[in-house]
Amino acid sequence: MNIKKLADVKDRFADYEKIFNSGDYDKAADILSAILERIEECTDERKAGTMDDTFVKKSDMDGRPIYISLNHVMEYYVYACYFEPETDVLCTELPVGEYYRTYGSLCLKLSKFRRAEDAFKKAICWNPVDLDSYLGLAECYKNLNMLSRYLDVTKQAYRFCCSRATMARYYRNMGFYYVARYNTEAARVCYTYSNIYYKTDNADNELKYLEQALNDKTPEYSVKQMQEILDKNEVEPGPDSKTIGIIYRVGELMMNDKDYKLARDCFSIVYDITQETQLKTLLDELDKDLEDNNA
Image (cartoon, rainbow, N blue to C red; front, top):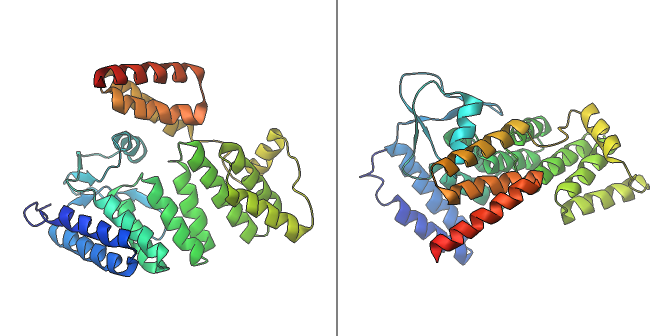
């Protein structure tokens, strides 16, 4: 990126945030759209990914380095493991992916679903492992009643769900899909399973809706029964072990580098999803060390 031309971008983004916080969302969207146009004019970097209607792949090889817009350092390793780049991967100077994701979320809020779709796709190209952008894109397709694309994007998002809350979101997405496909058994299990990971009013309300629509109480499934139904309907019964393993390994690398704050970030994510006692002990030790260092 040409930093001289982009020197005012962060200031303009701060202006956007002020307008957004004032509640003038249409004006905020115009400001952010102009910022993104300016960025596009000033950059010719090779993005980390490319995307067709719903599927993401790494950029075609052309000899240039790849640029990725990270939210957290662990995404660098997740990207490397899943996309296996064959050239240098560099980080953008500006959080371009975040800017596009923010614009997409704002367009969703304004019911400008096609604009939101385009923004989330661009965010994913800048960061092909950014879960929030996948979930935002899925919401676009949900509102556009494009169920096949909604399912495709939700299934791609699954790989990057690494907390109890995001796993719950995955199952709620799948529950919505199966309601739309009139597969009420799968839908009920998805919403019930979602609440096991992270209880929400949304899942409760959907289960109540199904009870009223079917005039039938929600069955009390055992975990084994639910997992069998999930498997039958090609819904993953738990988080992707590869992703969790990558994040744990990044935590170890950060520990070796004595970057205890980043290590704690990684281990806390793994603990959230696994609830392993050893990790809780390690996190307590890291908290104490960080507290002592800040004293």
